Length: 339
Ligand code: NIG
Ligand code: FE
Image (cartoon, rainbow, N blue to C red; front, side, top):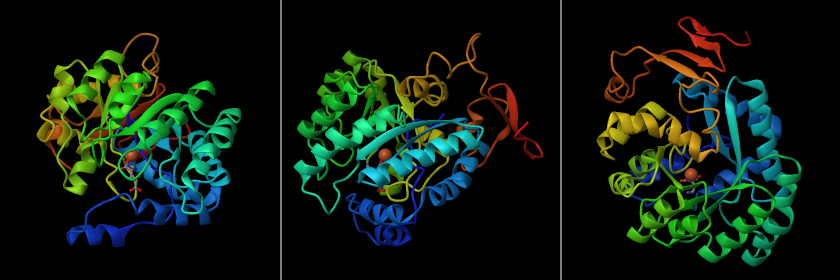
């Protein structure tokens, strides 16, 4: 289960990737390049582009994927992204969990107070009325939304019945994890620069820490403090953060390898992080995330003797068969859907 992705987008950022390889630092400014391409694409085009990405995830044993909007930054384009997610969920044997992230960046054309007002008064209500998202996420970080703005946006989302998530303290410490605790958010994500107080706030609120070591790997940044979070009693989940800028890496098994090698998590902690804790981050722990009577049968059969081999055989795909809701959707010999 991948609890944090930005899988729906148009265009690519190869030029930015190469610039970073030459030593340029990631600031998040490239998000607007993807916004331009995504605004120019139709809903059908977004579906067509995202489908093979999701099928590659399924092929690696991922049966539930959270997908954030946030490359539209205008009412029509954000709704278009979320409708694309809904269509993908109807057409593929995957559970997709849609998150509204209109507060992913500031649109170039609108003053910030005006855009925050648009989010609160127009976009969140429109998303909620159409039932297009389960969560609302805000990029609360240096150069993006302040803690005060994030609070305003998330409180509006809560009034409209959406669950809360925060992209927190990824680029710099701003106190976003503390806000996640204050609001009893479902999850706080990234957390590369979380403070000790932030860790305590998440533990107190039972907020899940969704860690995305693929992003630290790609950006060559220090990894988030998984051990300190676990020791403080914070449930830790792992996701890819798949997106065209800071993390073009879509392989959850590779992220599991980083979990063991870089976050110093045990294979058992990694297993929990991509199953039950990921389900908790998505509000799905009652129906998915563990093999129990009464839950849906989403299973992966691995070509491995022990679970530790999955992170150990790095960059390889050991998924041998995938069962979604009790039906074999992928097995030796290829895809098997619809059945
Ligand atoms: O999760 N942090 C903000 N958003 C993405 C990056 C998106 C992009 O660069 O396009 C992230 O890292
Ligand atoms: Fe992200």
